[in-house]
Image 1: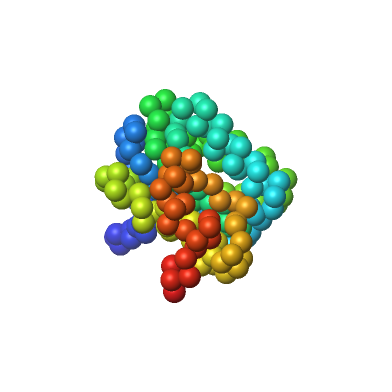
Image 2 (image 1 turned 90 degrees about the vertical axis):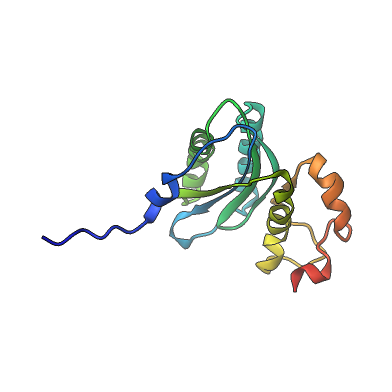
Length: 172
C-alpha cells in the first residue's frame, strides 16, 4: 500500500497559529485566482471601513495597512475580544458581499506572522508603506489612496519620509 504524500497547503498555515492578545501581527490576505480589483475606490473604502469597525469592536488595533489591487497587508495589535482566526473570519466574511459584487472572492487562507518584540514593527512598517511603490503602481512623489498609518506610528515614521513619500534610496 502506497503511503499518501501530503502537501503543506492551507493546513500548514493554521497548524501552529496562536492568538496572543496585545501581540503585533503582520497579516496578508489575497484575492483568489490571481485577480485584482481591491484598489477600486469603493472596494478600498469598504475594506478600510471594515478594519476600522473591527478596531471599534476591540478585535484589533491597526497600526498600518495597505490595500493593493490583489491583496491587503495589515500590521495589527490583536485585541482581547477575539482570536486572530475570529477577527479575520469577520473581516473577510463581512467584505465577501462587497467582493462578490465586483466579481471577486478571497483566497481560502490568509498569512499571519506574530512579531516577537515591539522593535520588530519598523521593517514591517517600511514593507507595507513601500508596497505600492515597489509594485510600480504610482510615482514616488504621490500618495497611495489605500494606505493607512495610525497617528502614533506616523508621528515617528512619517518623519523618516520625504514629505510622506518614500526616500529615493528606499526604492533601490
